[in-house]
Amino acid sequence: MRKQIEGSKAVARAVAACRPHVICAYPISPQTHIVEELSRLVKAEELAAEYINVESEFAAMSVAIGASATGARTYTATASQGLLYMVEPLYNAAGMRLPIVMTVANRAIGAPINIWNDHSDAMSQRDSGWLQLYAEDNQEAADLHVQAFRIAEELSVPVMVCMDGFVLTHAVEEVDVPDPAAVEAFLPPFVPAQRLDPQDPVTIGAMVGPEAFTEVRYLAHQVQFDAVEVVDRVAAEFRAAFGRDTGGLVRPYRTEDAETVVVALGSVLGTLKDVVDARRAAGEPVGVLGITSFRPFPYAAVRAALAGARRVVVVERAFAVGVGGIVTQDVRTAVGAALPVGTVVAGLGGRPITQAALAGMLDDVAAGRLAPLTFLDLQRPVVDREIARDREQRAARRGAHLQEA
Image (cartoon, rainbow, N blue to C red; front, side):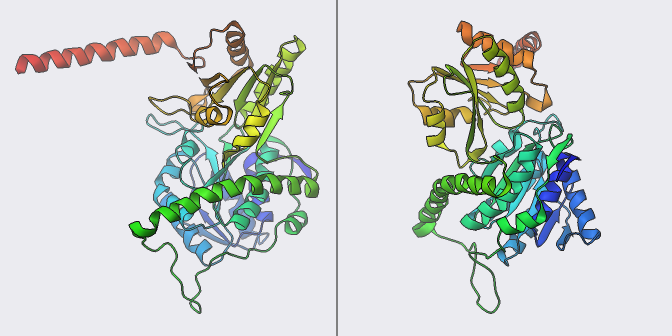
């Protein structure tokens, strides 16, 4: 049923429709409304689940691991510093191949403290072994959770569904919340690939020595490749069952004859599409490629979508300090050295990414003056002044040290 609903509540209703057995909850903005709504549904007996309040994000993932290992369909949610706090068990969940589903309401990482949206949190865990699916809007956020449980349980791997904090989590818009009966038909009862059972004792996640650790890590590597087919197929099956084309690997928009293609993840895709429509109306051959599945990274699909492009620009909501683009590196691997790929870092800490700024970026691309690494709307005088001050202070400290010596 289509209704005006906050993104967090739409996601909570979609998760509830998936019939989780255990929900591990610790509040942190901007995901708190999701677990609050799930708490309300459990209290109202609209959802038969064990709702466990824990004392930290570390505990939330630890409880999720214990629940999933005993054969329970398990869900949790977090953001930003909370995701970092659960890093140790996060890797354990992936290494133990437990099909936990977790919402990450993407938010910047401090310091300085910042509660607004960028992708620094989830991107920091890109090598953890979790699948990462990024939602463009709240409809896709809700739908991706249904698909995530199906993908996680088929592959026996954990899945993050990433949605932009506040931009999506707190936005009220029309969403067709997945119908519980339809979800039940789409998502079969959970049959765990492995389960702790006192009647059939096994050890999961035991210590492994040098003679076997490489093989274990290789298997984690291989399942990411297997996941490409599963993510794509589950999206097609979801479309057939629900009549909506959401999820999958990539989402091209007006790329068929585009000479310039902008690649991005998350909610900025909506703004980019509006900018591309305006440029197309003026006769400029530009397009957008949205990446839904960042892990596994869909190299073949990206390569095919960008086959006709003459240049590519990746708009990133996070970056590797001292290096540059994160998504850019995967895009470059997909397309090879012949196709120029530039990086534009935008929207850090929730700074608005405006149509005007993106239009200016495309003007720079057309004029051939876009640098290989650009920070959109960077306040150049401010940073130049700070760089000069920092260098002066370092020189003064060095001079004082030499005098003392």
